Length: 249
Length: 311
Image (cartoon, rainbow over all chains, first blue to last red; front, side, top):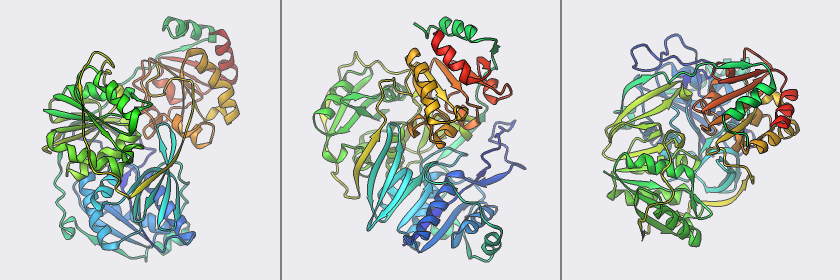
């Protein structure tokens, strides 16, 4: 079974994003970029499936600028087998990404597509579900456990009330949550090896997908700032304040 | 504009988040509410939804296929009904986030996630970058699909309405997925996302035993819900559904008490709209103090029991 893992190059999760003065977006010049953390978890899960013998080949794909090659190389260094870059310098919305991934899915016929549940830049949380709709496949979103069982996959999902388990017919789409696994670091020999692994470069036009955005960003602003308050000297003072707030009977 | 709201319900009662979504939908036009489920509970939820102020009509879809809100079954039902509507609004909850994008893609619509405000029929604000920026976006799609952040809208009244309930049907079991089971945390405490007071614990608590020994009695004293930072959940001190933050739950209680939580931006994203933020931490430079209204620097293992005892 082949596994397809889409990955996105995003702002590093340790960097505090700064809104541009002109209100057109977030300033990404000279900012450290990394693989979206949820996608790293997806790559790791794919590798574990391969190590268990459940997956035969791992294909990683990214939609983004040429620099997204670095992100794909990271995935190859972790253990993916080959990569596809669908190059676009303009921002591509989740719906268009899902259409591109549908085209790749049609071509590659993976048994499972493993995606991060959301990207930490636009926080949309849509692409996996949209891909599932477009391919007519079942979806196991927010996965904290993935188990292949014959021609099905059992996915434990992190939901508002706790955990929920669903069984999906393969082929299926799975999106990862934080506690699915802890991604490995690529070793130096594997980083070297990744440089010779195959990487194809395509464009959205190659797949006949229109990536014209449906949403126009009118402005991007900083949220209202909270002011730091007061430091209290004792528990008694805090008790008094909580009583003032009316939260203590 | 005619708007369809996908209602989430449990034990025959619409969830609070759906009341907020109904309130958001009213800003767009006439609100119809879809209750999908099975049997007497679904019927009861539909009747309760009909009483929500601002709901003009309730659509009840009763089928075993909708019992567990499997996206493979519910999305085709919703998409099939959307011919009559200009917009679909779902809660930005785990169910809404699971189902809405599947519907949006079926309709060839780019969804707007986690809507904070509705500024006209096609313009919305939403948080990006863990809430470090707020984007105003305008949708060019003929139909809109939105998920709504419950804490950003005042809830519609659960009573006062008298809508009619109409039965609808849609595709039955798609045969793609089955519900195996759920492990839900049972608690007498209020629900985390709608509680007036939240007490959250972080990694500084050191263990699951200490987390529950210190946090639970304080929460019970205050009638509060219990939350946790990602670090505490990852370390196994608290279950996953306690997590407050960018990818966990978004809360905005009147009072949020953060205990042993340093305040990573991902955590702040989930609670910074709270009324009053109280922070207890031994590190006086912890980022949490930059947004806390009331701070107490010190050893939580001494402070928390003393606080619980004195309240």
